[in-house]
Length: 316
Image (cartoon, rainbow, N blue to C red):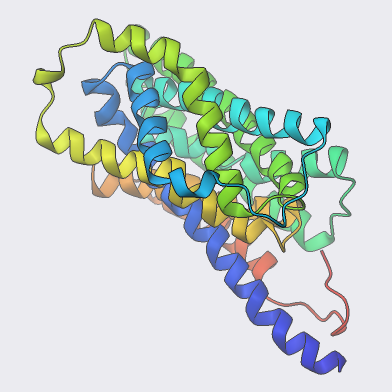
């Protein structure tokens, strides 16, 4: 009986890992691609249109299933915070930050997400964090150190004005990191009472409500005819990826994986952001940066490769 249960658990866990990794890879890709979007559209208008696209795509997901219990006031507050931190503030900080710095630099800062998620899940969820998860977090920290060294070498060639703008952009990206880590931890609580589809639809709707006043103001003063067809197609991908695909994938994986362990998969976010910056936006990637990403990926393998735990238990 135990052996049979273990055989079913392993594929389910691997599917959850795949959902988490794909979710963060998509986040990294659209984070990098917000750079050309932010050059063509005002930040608040861009974020508002993103939530609007998501609201249309997930209209059917808003319907409450008959078997879903009414939400307690505390859970309603967590739903709002999930959207306010993970959607509203994350979008503003990330779009503005990436527009002021490079996608590779954003990847540097976002590498710290696994450590922040592990810390928050330990504080707020009382999750027991095992040695391998901490080693994975350490790999992420080492990767950040290597990337910071590479970033320092690049920044030394910038003029003072560009360097100051990049510094502010990096600070905003770090604020987005804290929002993303909070989103991961709160999401673990929500998956106990809501389905991934319902969570995705509700928090996107809250994001749309919060962003509408700012978005309408930006739209009133914007010349839409100046935007090319390519930007509109990129916006459609951004809206669907940011509001629908990544949230659903993340909540699906998070439903069966502890938040601290899931947080290690956020290492795919900076890797994907930097690679998108290099392959799509034409930014450069140095050998030091490649080594840093290799270390970060090694940390993710520490979490995903099964340990020597007994079939009836899973070591976190």
